[in-house]
Length: 474
Ligand SMILES: *[C@@H]1O[C@H](CO)[C@@H](O)[C@H](O)[C@H]1NC(C)=O
Ligand SMILES: *[C@@H]1O[C@H](CO)[C@@H](O)[C@H](O)[C@H]1NC(C)=O
Image (cartoon, rainbow, N blue to C red; front, side):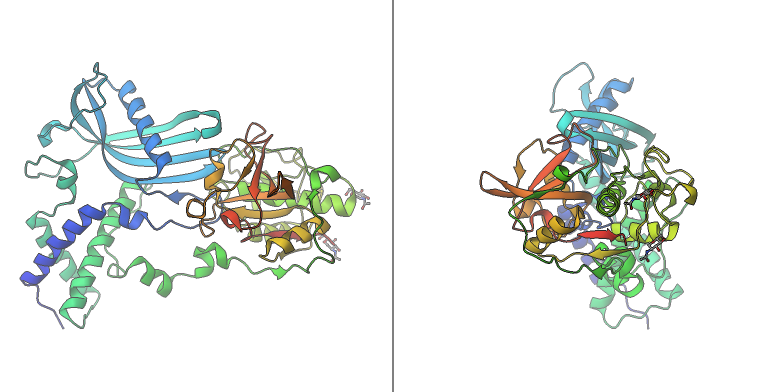
């Protein structure tokens, strides 16, 4: 059955356009893209770090251009951040001419009201920000003129991009009708059809964003799923095991500790922890977390402290995504399959994915299985003291500007479901009555306290109890 496309739909559409301009990019950016630790995360435009990065790219852009007028960001198309040593921002924006000449130092430069003078460019920037060093580096800048669609003159660029000219509505309706016919869609009521049209429109916008960002030869647009929301699509078509870290490969539960946790413990005092390493600009935190754990397990089994290879995992662990993130649970499985880990010296770190150069002749440490720990911090402490350093993951929000001391961020800044970084828990104790976890990071010795981060213990801060695991060496 076809539904009518009379006035109600068009009226509704203009309402949707108004809502759209209020919500702006926020609506779909609000939902973080939760991936394995180290993987890129989408950012909301209100993100403080992003704002700083945008200012930085504006400055650099203007320094490098010969144009007479200053350009400013007129529209944020997309932004992601990835935790590396510091933060790597990937930002796509539109930059448009302001009325300020470049010589002026004014910060309040209005855009040209006439659209033909705006001379908008679409730019992709990559910025590497290391907050604790106070450095920002522009890694990449790629700009091209925006192809302007003929539009009515307007005083406000944001309005121009979100308001819905009538022809567009008609075009959209045409596309939607075509979609309904092609995929045999049948909606039960006018309301349902209106809603599906709204979803369809949103999905078209998302597809456009994907298209803008695609560096290869892909095309994005209408598919048979174009009337489904992201949630509907995920629950109907995706394997939650693949898209959600909290449903990662199931591991055996770790046997509980034999006794209660001592008041404090630190594996650094017992020779089970190698020196601080540096993951560089690669989202390989998961590999460092896992080698750190295995170094400890091997030390406790064998009596020798080795420094083991992360690069082997970056190159040869096909279950994870190298510099784009990974899960400790997968890494253990990959190591079991490979037959073990080579040493840092034999297979040294480059911070880039290369072809796998592993040879079983050089295996220095093996593992036999892996276990997942309890989510109770007291149990975790007891287990750690008896069994060695633990691979953990956490929300690294509070780590970005950390210098020293015991970090204890408010829950709203560090919720336990936004886990984005994997590290190694090496000990615990109290400092001036404040209980802490001692956490070995992989951002170099110049980070935090000689490379270490101290996080409050006892309130599951930043989700520290969520993903605790260890390899087992028999
Ligand atoms: C530790 O490992 C080394 C090298 O794999 C091996 O030669 C040695 O016998 C092991 N020692 C113990 C106590 O297991
Ligand atoms: C543990 O794994 C190693 C290497 O794969 C193997 O040689 C050893 O027999 C295994 N130990 C046990 C108890 O299964």
